[in-house]
Amino acid sequence: MPMEARMDERVQEDLYCFLGHEVTVRSDLPELAEHLRSVYAQFHLGPEVTRAAGRARVEGPSGFQVEVKDCLAETSEILFDIGGTIYRPRCKDPYTFDCDTAGIPDPLSFLQFVVLMELSRRLRDRHLIHAGAVSWKGKGLVLPGPAGTGKTTLTLALVKRGFKFLSDEVACFHLKRGILEPFPRTVNLRHDSPEMIGLSLKASTSHCMTGPREKVWTVGIEDLLPGSLSDPCVPRFLLFLRGFGEKTRLEPVAASSAVFALLKFSFCRLDDPASLLMDFAPIVDKMECFNLVMGELDVAVECVLRLLNGTANAR
Image 1: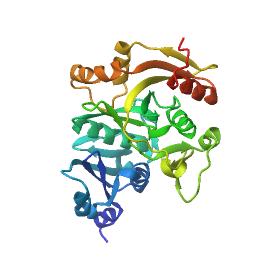
Image 2 (image 1 turned 180 degrees about the vertical axis):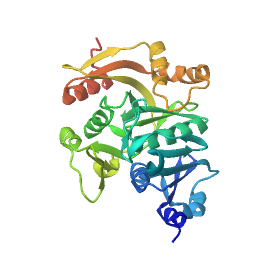
Image 3 (image 1 turned 180 degrees about the horizontal axis):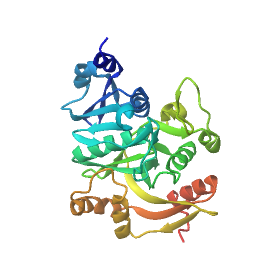
């Protein structure tokens, strides 16, 4: 059998629908294809051959193509073609970069990031922010923060205490309607996270991805905490996660400063930051904004609860 035919057998095609945009993903790296299907299970329509069925379920779809090609043996690279934009990061394997990628930890996360970035570029009325998001009695709470600042841990701890889940990674703002919408990607958990939060994983509903560094469990929020998915809500609180400290600290931030800080967590290329600031300013101006330094997790959760119930001393 020719080499080209053998390579074609490795190619997997999948169809996703994000906020009305169809995304076709072709990959000859099964690890990346499997990971994307796991993380975006709620958005996965099925293999590419089901495109016709997918179109029947989505009114007026538009979208783009994603191509992932294994060039590790030839150039120690993985090629990512995202809607016509080419990325060729140097990689040791499908789990490990061999170069600096501006804080993105691995090729699995990189694929998610560039797909969301291309999606954000095509959205008109919505904007995606790198943040956890939950709701409490119809009030939306957004938790922007860099990787490693506890977004997923705090989000799930809040949901366990009765909050509703919008996302642990992507806060979806509908700018014209001034609301937060659910973006329920599958939750990624490190091996010690469930025990820290006090949750148990069921083998029947969770999926384990094993890389060279550690095991990562992916599980749907409804499987982890049934009945916890939030309806769209009005954003009322903005808490920038500023890392960890000996004590939990909540410090107020002026809305004028918060709107600039929020754009730093945007998935979109800021080609026209002035227009985006004008869109976001009316939303953020109606929110209570704070910096949050997390101490013990239980203390941080109680601090957030007091804030939303109107009894927190922010100073």
